[in-house]
Length: 371
Image 1 (cartoon, helix red, strand yellow):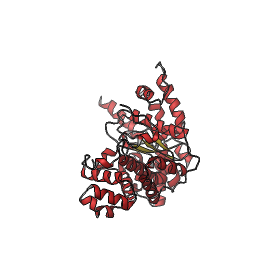
Image 2 (tube, rainbow, N blue to C red):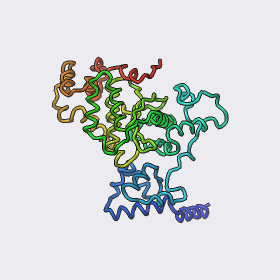
Image 3 (cartoon, one colour):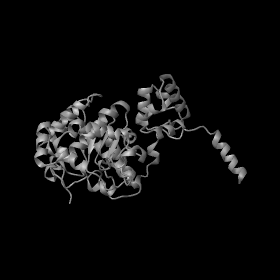
């Protein structure tokens, strides 16, 4: 037994680590550019993931490969030269029967046909094709470590299905305008926030985003997704914002929209990647929060009221209805946004409930309610 274990250890030590040539190329470029390991967290999401990659224990996803090619100049032939391409191969790992086909049929996402052998894979591949073929798999196939603000109870197969449906919806109503990287700035978010004063503000926001080449897809959440929104990429290189409206309120709509747009402007344009968010987790685990989520929150909040102005406001000290209305008028935004921020900070979701616009969003997108 001891001799056998020694032999296995010897084989393990002499076996090249996964993506060894890619790791060597990245290390070489880091040395040339004077980069530290911490500089790679923008691509991988955390120091842990960087360490796993540099030790040959983690392959890279397609968005990360694109970022390494764009920002470090890693040649495409190196990224594709490994036996497994140096890339994750998500299709090989998919257990097609684990997708929630029944719930998807009820929502009208897939054909309502009787299941049979191989049915799940055929149905899902059709959805993937609508989402943008194989590139959609690379963009939307998540593991738990890839979800920056994700509930531990999430069903990852349901999350994947939802992402593909968002992308399919966006593809089928793709804006005519082209997307220009760098166009989503803090000033652009402020422009979007000011649309909240209109009764049809959510629809106006969708129109303004389309003029920037960014589709907004409203797609109902699936069971066990615990999901508010996401920022993803389409196969043509444009971002798409997906929202579930699981909380059909104006305050939730505007914060979630601004948060996902902040991911596009602050993170995705620079380093690729994609984000899915359960916003009920905001500040729950502040010590372990992904810094990108905090940055997206900061932009979403600054787009309506800068931090210093908020801390000095009367409504923060004494959140009366009159104070809410006065600040909303001063900032030219809907009172729901002010009320939502107060409720979040105080963790009192009965407070100012008359302002948050319950039931005022979903009906604007012509999506029927469910009991």
